[in-house]
Length: 49
Image 1: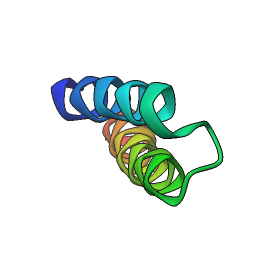
Image 2: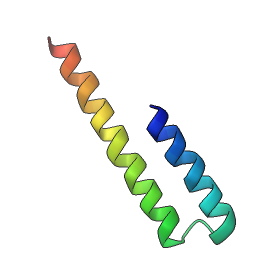
Image 3: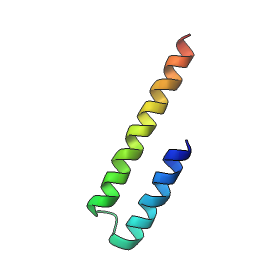
Image 4: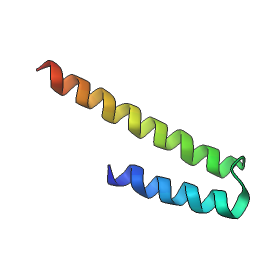
């Protein structure tokens, strides 16, 4: 969760500096999505045991 929050902060900073559609901002967003999906998958797997 900390990594997601760090990435979110960096994404917001990049968006403020470059605009929301800048490639750097979009890459941060994709990375946050990847972490979030992994977290949800992990939580789902824990619920099955």
